[in-house]
Length: 112
Length: 113
Image 1 (cartoon, each protein chain N blue to C red):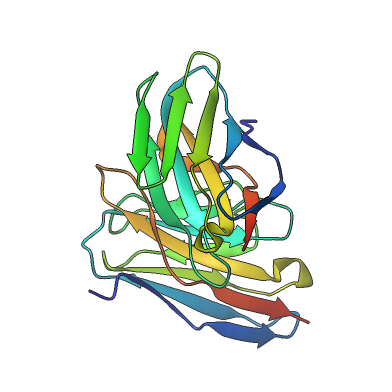
Image 2: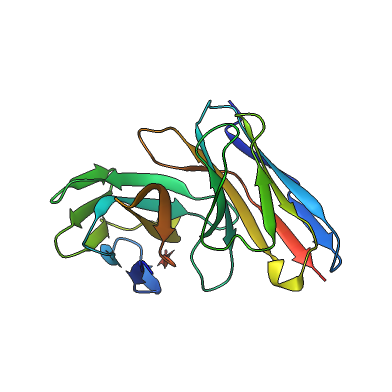
């Protein structure tokens, strides 16, 4: 099992550009999450999904959109990147029970 | 706004020392408390998920306790080793939304040989 994978690992964008981050999991998990990690702050939830075809907002959803068209994939989109979105993005997934989350390796995004 | 606080922010200990750190969380509407271990350049890995007041969990030299009535959990490491160096995160989920975790900012542990 590959577990949770994220594509790409690194990306540099210019302000106003768009991009999509892909999270994939092969554990048949129902739940998937997107977090951002910034210095001095804990992991902050952007959006999450409790099943295929469903999404919900987390703590910091503004400027991001998500889609969960297939159970194994959770996409995070930035429509018009801003420097404030420079961060490390982590995807996670889990079963309903037990509810420990399994994290991907992260995507480092820089917006100039 | 739910707040999860961890202390200390960072800790430096000598190899062989035992250490502990604290996670504080809201004591009302408690559902679960998670501990994760996060090594530099890697992703967080679950250590424990605790749900019952008085729970004690152990994995090797690492153990954790839970007090849901007063809203705190302790993580203990016995005989620290350099490979224990990592950031230890706790995360809370409440009954109002069991789907989400609220993370603390972590305790960064460095163990010197």
